[in-house]
Length: 291
Ligand code: CP
Image (cartoon, rainbow, N blue to C red; front, top):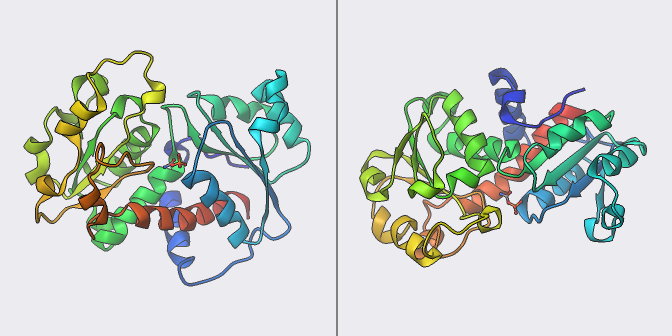
């Protein structure tokens, strides 16, 4: 039995296997999860991850039951460990969890007999987002072997981003050259190259990855306003110009703070392609772990 808590749970050949499976699902059908049952427990809101896991399971003919947190017994004081153990007693083939606390999914592993799949835990990890980002980028460049030396700037609230953490680990492994771009209060101590100025890196990158400002994880507002932030870090059409750059964002996008309206409409913007790929990649992950 395998859990997927973070990208390092997969070695390179397993990542490639998942990407190949995802590619295959573009054209072929599978019923590999038939007669299997899955539970989604999202203690934190989600549009893309929750929906795409559930669609992915249904595409593979599995059954999926969603625990509605608002009407669950967590409001009566049940711990997340007891919630997971009780759902596990119903014998699901995997439980997919999102939680606001970093480490929550790793903690739950010890209370279940089935795989735990991390749908995002605090600022720690979002492994399936990193896999779908890698899939989207390699599709654009024509294969995983084309990524070595390609330059990506990850822009925004890196300190509070589980997506940044997972992308930094996974994209580096496949040879991408990462620069972090953010104001100082959105950076942590890092061995990665970094810049406080988007204009200093715009001529040197092949890919921009914009991130949302994670205001829900800020204990203290250490910056003026999102408008001030956007003035320096919003990805605008004026900034990108006609450069040969693709633009990604995990969503949800803060329009005109992370990316301006015009760039969101631009064909170089891969945001909806990422979402489409998210279903394929999550089909691949679920088949890899559970079929
Ligand atoms: N990218 C992502 O995790 O989006 P959701 O929060 O909508 O799932």
